[in-house]
Length: 67
Image (cartoon, rainbow, N blue to C red; front, side, top):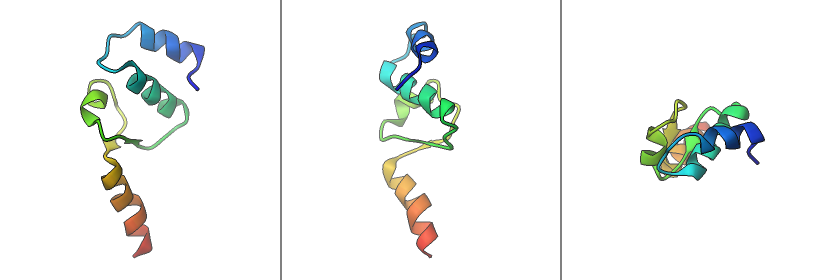
């Protein structure tokens, strides 16, 4: 759940997808390493974390570990 500060920040910035910005801010707060999304174009606008599709995530993080 986003914090009050994150909501204030998101409300003060014009982005294509408000919810994506909240997800990004929550990911920063949680020290996530990557954003997993099938809608990368919306995140490219503001995201400074690496992001990848769900398929790429599965291939990179699960398939490599099985080998």
